[in-house]
Length: 508
Image (cartoon, rainbow, N blue to C red; front, side, top):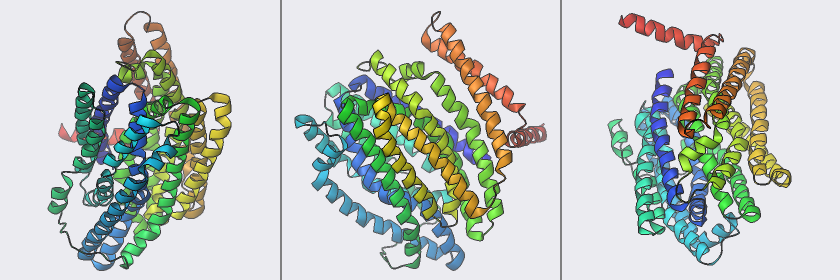
């Protein structure tokens, strides 16, 4: 798990750097204005529709493929792959037609403040980007397929390809003063990011078959896993839609841009760390779950929780401590002014705890999916999203737009607690006492690290450029955390150090 996760993190970091560059370029040409809000709204419908189905396939494909292979051999498992792919393409066609017809109604739903020319632009954007649904659904099958075959690299570089294409079209769009090129770039980026998938799949033995059989027993098994996940995904997307709609209604279209920019920065943490760890362990956990080896599955998950939090907690607290200079670096240029920096920074700080709690849940829920239980995590997610929506209406009265972010963070904390309780009920004790000690140590050291970064930046920012002050603060704080965590006697850290020591000792 360690080497694969590390490789995924490196590739994802590179992809996220380009993701920041993409957002920075967009902020330069369009600021936090109407076009960025329209772009966010136009992306919502295809993502919502695709996620309803794709999320269920992503979680169900690996366990069911493994089950088919164990029961009837690899040929049947490969046939199952073609079958589900063909079914998804038919669904995609129906979804695109649906999106074309109801684009206007959905744009008004997602952003009630849109009117006249802005609404027309949003509808055109939505209809262009709708075709990306085919790419999302294709990825839902073949990302899992390649991971099963041990190929983690090609699925990991998709984001890099997408960002390069979108950056190119954003620049052309800005220079040409033609916002529609932004939507075309988004579509091409989402489609062409998977350009290496077909060749890679064939190299691993995949042969396409023209077959659609919705009555196949493995398709039925996949549907049984997928339906609860689809409900969960729907709840999440509805909560996101409520966030955007409330932001637009109470604070204007620009507020959607502030939500988007703050979430994009925080997505660096989940994308680089959480997704890398869960992607690398899921095939192993699925194998153990399908075999009935629950004890070893729990050990893997326990270890993954600590390893994830070892990086997620300090990264989140560090980003909170230096929110304003980080946002200045990434976004402040062109139409993105100092007021936008302050508002986006406050949103980031309010959202940040969500990353920690959601990452915790994202690791634990893999145990449920590994044994084919998609109902348990889904029920928890639905409850979490209901809490989120209720808190939106309450907290927005006291904290303005930041109330939306706080509601998301608090509901994620509730979801993480419920997920842990349900996991222990279903699978027995997870030896969490040892992990809890490690998590407390990580949290305390991360808070100290954040305070150090904040104090150093506060002292240096008036004496030199904010950029230099920020980098010095990050370096000193990171060194402090790295050194103190080595002496914290966290088992997972000690194992990693011993492994590295023996590896380099053998080379000598």
